[in-house]
Image 1: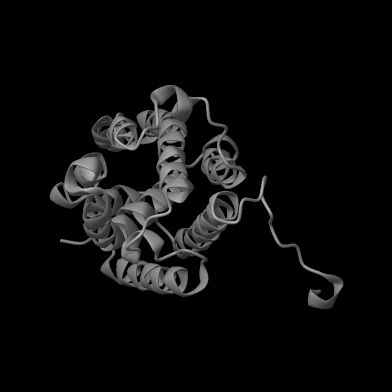
Image 2 (image 1 turned 180 degrees about the vertical axis):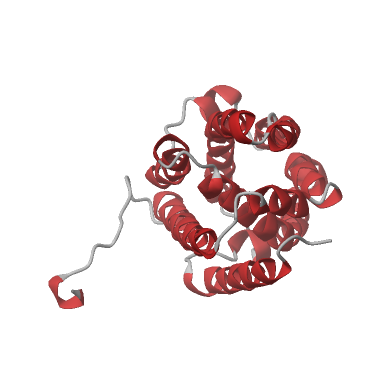
Amino acid sequence: MTINPELRKRVDAILDTFIKDFYETVPFAQHQKNAAELNLDYYKRHNIETILRLRRKRTIDALAIKYFTKVDPVQAKAWAHYTDDEMLHDRLFAADLAKVGVTKDQIYSTEPMLSTKLLTGYLQYGMEFEDSPLALITSVYFVEYVTTRTQPEWLDNLENVLGQENVKGARAHVNTDLDDDHDDFVWRVMSTLVTSDADEQKVVEHLNHVYWLWKLYFVELHQLTVLGRTGAQIPLPTSADV
């Protein structure tokens, strides 16, 4: 039985609009989904950044477990189990990268992109200064929902382009999410943190912030690897826009 089904219906509808907007507005958004000839620089850096993001998220997950140990040990155990499932998934992506010539030294010596720092910083800010894992767990629900509804198609195409053996790690990661119903699990944990209308509105706020940061990431990824620009080229409003 779904906890707070009306809120979940609302949240899922928001996420569906995000997926549609992503494909329609972000440069190169459909590249890994549809391209017959893959831009390897784009593919490699995307997977490197995924690994770097997973490594930093481990620290934030530990802060969430610490929070739950104080207020809800049942959820502390649940999140610890989930974190255990996800803890070493960076190795799955690293194995795929090795097959296209990227070494572990190259991966772990790479400086994360600004958008990655902003996203992980946003999640850590919630733990450190709001003393709540709501931003983190809302973000995780965002990722679990969007991943299971987009990545199988991406991986089908990547298998056609690169070969099935070369994307086994990413496929294993997605299959874990699907087989273990991670989106349902994360929703149950998140629901324990939502006890008021204000909390519900905060969830929606976090969703919008996280999506903005994800769009920023893919824009920066495109600029860095396809357009060859160094550093983040983030458009700022002009006086005419104010």
